Length: 334
Ligand code: LMR
Image (tube, rainbow, N blue to C red):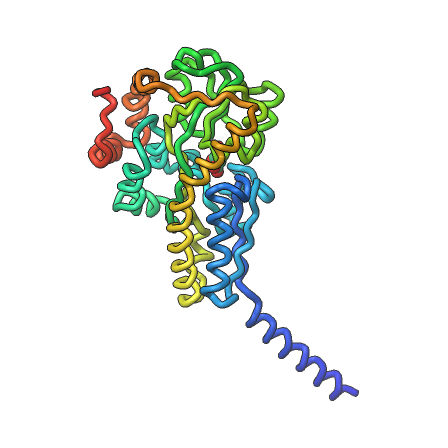
């Protein structure tokens, strides 16, 4: 009897050892936007590629729409190791203490994604990601979304139209200053709370790329959308550094290859996703979409230009100058 029990015990131990050896490494990837956004689609693409290239050794579980955590909490969860991977917007690194990332929040600093890629895909981008390491975070890639536009319940044609309006922004000192520069009242709020805040009138308006506005149905509770394209919103894909460094080298290499493909995919679809979201907004008939004239665009640029001088010290004058040099933007010559 004893021998039989010993045998059963040994068999069970062998079985669980085999099961453990085969159990995939789970990577929880949390984000706050809808699945059918550039970030949502790219994270699903990465999950598929990761399974394929690691031959099932790694399993990426994607949690969209703040299903696990809201904005600020998800960063804490990553640092604690409760989730392994995130793709927060670049604005979310300022509150973490890496203020240089708020350079991306400066109004009109990038004219288009070509300008932006000179930074994110070059040495400046790499040095920014390296600044996350002391926080226990490893930066893997930059993913695009697009340029933000303002929405409200009243028409927006001039900066004065935003005067006195409570406008939701992400937690960023540069964005706060940007709203103040047009006489608005900045309201910092988690992304998952914006729809309701707009619906109930807690805030009057907001700014986001159209893919975020449309997939959260914000256009159903905003009567006017003006394509100001006044600032950039994109992401850094990050992992818990201890977790990442602890992965078997072959798996880590395969995941890096999957990330490379996912990044190319993300940056390829971002513009199209925003374009089709804009079509969706127009078709809904719930929001009037306004395209500013050249002069109107210039008026917004001029109104927001002082943000560059006021906030230069926060992100570092040298960093700003390097970006200006790459992009050709000069806030003093508009
Ligand atoms: C926001 O809070 O507006 C954005 O960061 C949401 C996102 O991740 O695109």
